[in-house]
Amino acid sequence: MSKAIDNLTKAMKRAEEVRPRVGGFPYLAEALRQAGATRNVWSLPSCQCLFLAEEGPVIMQGVPLVSGAVDVPAFDEDALIRALRIDQAGKSTFHEFLNASWRAGVVRYDVDFDARTVAYQGCNGEEYIEAYPAVTIG
Image 1 (cartoon, rainbow, N blue to C red):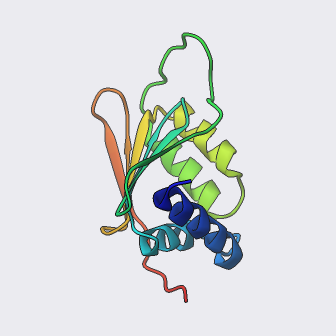
Image 2: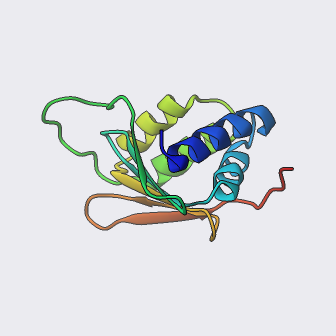
């Protein structure tokens, strides 16, 4: 296992220990930032996750949301915002959030750990950017 993978794995475990059930994403993001991650790019529906980190880039492959040829849903900012608010309220799992984001037409999202923003993107250049709050973890 590389140092980059080890750092990211430890950061995710640390975040699980300190993050609240409601509003927990900023804690995960801060743990990853402290571990040297600068960006996290998700590709949907493949659920491929690219971390850019000081120790080197890392790909994590999740379970894809679809298989075979499928039509890409139209980008629906209102549906995306609803999915975000449900997730932020602790009323969905991460997998449910990814599915709802895909159904809202998100094909990629990019987390910038330094700027504390997430840019959600559709296949035709549509984009919704949301900032998340700074948090302190020891």
